[in-house]
Image (cartoon, rainbow, N blue to C red; front, side):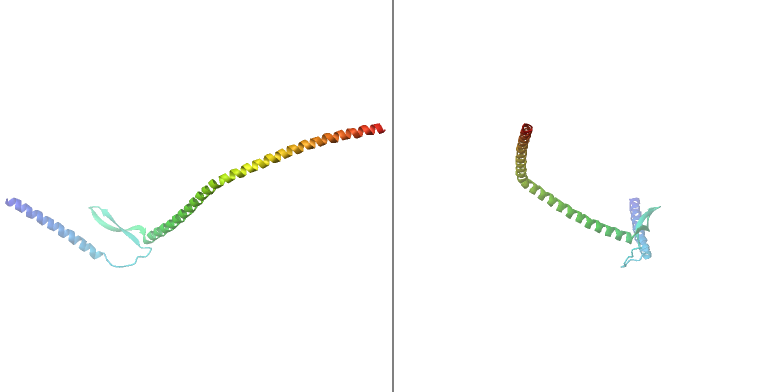
Length: 158
């Protein structure tokens, strides 16, 4: 029983020691880092954490700068405004297309009647042309008959 208590105490002491080391380590690291309010410039690099050998974390500067992040934000705003502009344009085209479909549907019956009227007019004009051709052919025959009559009379007079 004494050995069980001793092991418990040793484990408790080990845990306390680990906790103490865990608390002391960041306290020492915090001394090397300055915390506070500041304003970053566009050339400042972002800091990232990496794991090195022995599972220790090390803070390092990355290749990404504050200016890169600001440029990404500006590009995102431009893209959002362009997207909104395109959405507005598509909505306008959609409304115009719907209006065109409505007008085309309503005007198709009037277009059909106009087309039928035009066909009737063309047919009437074709019939008029055919009658005039027949009249012209009749006039030609009459002229030919008249010529023959004149020639006959002319030959009788001689």
